[in-house]
Image (cartoon, rainbow, N blue to C red):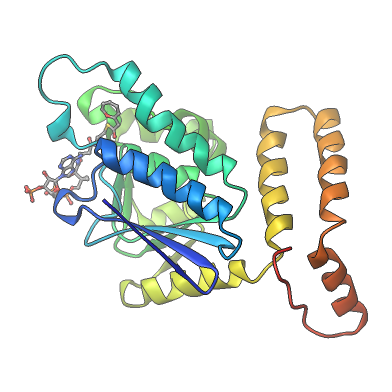
Length: 255
Ligand code: LHQ
């Protein structure tokens, strides 16, 4: 259900159930979690690009699987979705969502769990949960208000309205919008640019920034000092300073 390929420092993860709009089944939850772990371990990988095959990014849970009988929704989330969403933050490399088409329900939530969102001008985000009487899950109640603010988050979650790419850009819900014809090329170029930057520093930026959401000022300042001690010992720090002094472009190795 997932295609995994590493090219020029970028791990490309493609959700691959195009006839189901890449809706999640159990296998897909597990394969995304495993692919992120693999990308975290692989020193060749310096950026992760998550996208969908075909017309959609991801339509959320495959509703065909949860229609019948008694589904234990709590267990469902605890066993399948929550470990997957946690893995996005545990992965100390930049993760980009290349939102090629509609992202709905938990499909919108995983886009929010990525660090950077790029959208095709034909893409849209739908907080579809309310349309079937459910609550935003898979981190939807965590990331959405933190990205767009509580006022807009409640509106999007309560109405379940479709947000087209251009409006998503205006809201800060996505970082860039590209024309469909150039979308993949632009997304790959963006990912390759990030893959050439100081990977360990970026991993520490990610960890420290997300920590800062949970901590007060004093604790955040302390965590920054701790993270900076680590960043200051990387080869990329030395290279960055040397390149600056020598007035040349830096060549970062991710170490
Ligand atoms: C689908 C789906 C889909 C199966 C489109 N499943 N086939 C966690 C824990 C426990 C329980 C429940 O859930 C969760 C997390 C969740 O994610 S809940 C939210 C689940 N997702 C949704 O409610 C979204 C449902 N889909 C839609 O609202 C629309 O399909 C969207 C807005 C995604 C796309 O609309 P359109 O562009 O108009 O396309 P479409 O509706 O015609 O769909 C295209 C095809 O994809 C269609 O199949 P078909 O064979 O008729 O061409 C759909 O049945 C299929 N599809 N979403 N979630």
